[in-house]
Length: 455
Image (cartoon, rainbow, N blue to C red):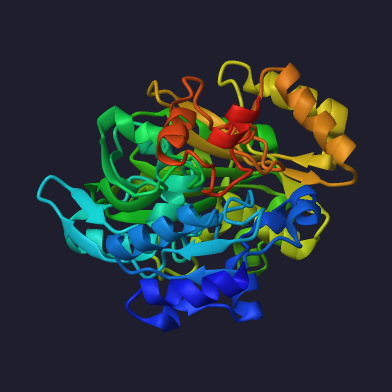
């Protein structure tokens, strides 16, 4: 297959240098942050493509997909490779379609909608939006490296979700343009509710080539860290700020000790033995937040203005799944889960988990607004990994007591927890990728036309 690709693909793009076969580069561009999971690390470490191509426009993508469809070449789309589920790792070789060069911000409209190509870095979009009086509604902790298209394909929420929900909530994604994998690839526009046909499908049902993303008015932010002697006290205070409608916030993150001890660059804000909360709060409310924290028995360990992504220290660099990264740097036996607690039972649920697993599970709470508008305690708890059986026991226990788990230790859309029950993503794959050549093996419920005929 490599010979076939080398002979043909360079002629389909304007610059043949954007076709790559160097083994070290192909290996790097065939991988993401799958190694956060010891299960996926074992499953996926030997998987890679034969070659990588870096298109710069829709016409080049159509040329590439037309050829690959004719010759049954698997195609795995790639953003910036900051995902953790192995979304961008090709299971069946073939070609990686690296969209990083399609990185233009076409415009930001007066209504506050950014029209962008998929390869635009979220950090660049945030910086540009703030010069126009706008900012992202939500973004991952990997904002500096992560791409917008990758975030739509495999992401969920992040900083800002406490106020604006996840990526798929409240019409944040207004429209997406998608190229199909057919004999003659077509360009389709999905608007409104139809964007859910494509979102979080890991590039299995079309190549996203343009995005209409709703922004929100810019806020002058500040950062604050508060330490508490007891985790229950830290949780109670953070919950009050997260659900309180009077507070303008972008981050409310609560860490059980010893998680804060793993943040080696900012140990000065993490007193020994204390449970910690990080906030991004409206600058005008900072003094009020500090006073509220002290009145609740907390100690303010850091407080200061937020001047953008170059702020030092940038507390959001230690939230969401960056928390897991810092823990793995400290001890590579750590991994994580992605959970949603019941806001009405969360204290009971945490107590049950602690009684059964003790310090095998450490609580890391990320508050976020759900699609119904209620702020809930999401969680990315740290887990001390011993065996896959013990990990699955933890997941099973969570589900038994009503804790939602999006399993980050599987490599398919369905079991990852964001597959839609109405199967619109599957229906789109059947329409747009009838042979099943886009990121094959990642949507388990799909059968290709050939498989259907066989059965």
